[in-house]
Length: 107
Image 1: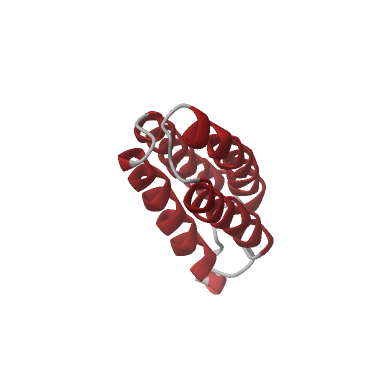
Image 2: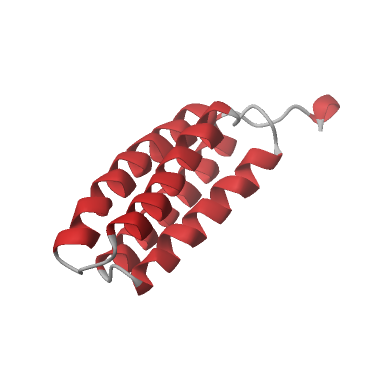
């Protein structure tokens, strides 16, 4: 499960980082705001990727997905991209759990 979830978050961090110049040049968002918000989201993806060995990191990943969708209020394309990554996040968790079920004695 961690491998798929890590891949989703890693690619999402790239997309979020590339959304910064789009927000500045196309949507005329203030550079500082776009840099801080986009940068924090991209870095948080990478931090949560490193922390996926903890069960609470899954919930942190869901928070990132919600924040990426909410970024659509500033960059309308992020509604689509955030929803796409949220669907990929859900799929990675679902597929990961079915591929590596938790044994009964560990549950």
